[in-house]
Image 1 (tube, rainbow, N blue to C red):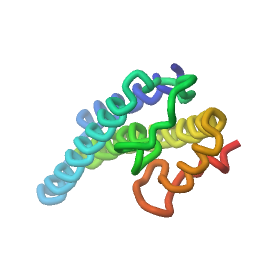
Image 2: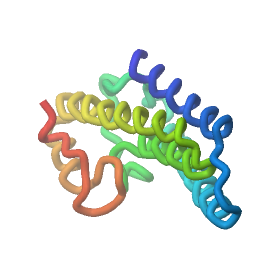
Image 3: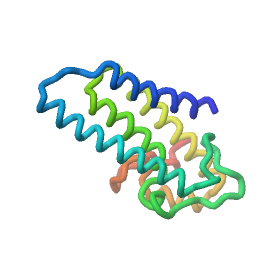
Length: 158
């Protein structure tokens, strides 16, 4: 519960800080940043909700998988190993862009570091639970960023 609670707190703090300390830049820059930011927030929320719905009862706040559950590799999990965490980062970054808030930027940076740490811990648990099946999954599906060749590799986590 500790890392999950910290993640939730930082996400909400980032959103609140974004709107409380919104930067006042020129109207063109602000409109573009707001449009991109809102799009990122919506995409992140969709990704997170889709990931949670796909796992259903198997979605846990703990980074350790549910004992006896299957490794999910379909749907959004066919493109990202950690779509829920990617959604969190997109929401936080989108809030920062939508408001151009320096306070939210600091909070979002802390949140991204916490998410990165959680992904490493979760991959370690998944590797222990699913062994070769997880190694094969890691070799073909990126962790947080949906680009081929970029991944937080679970095989390097100790």
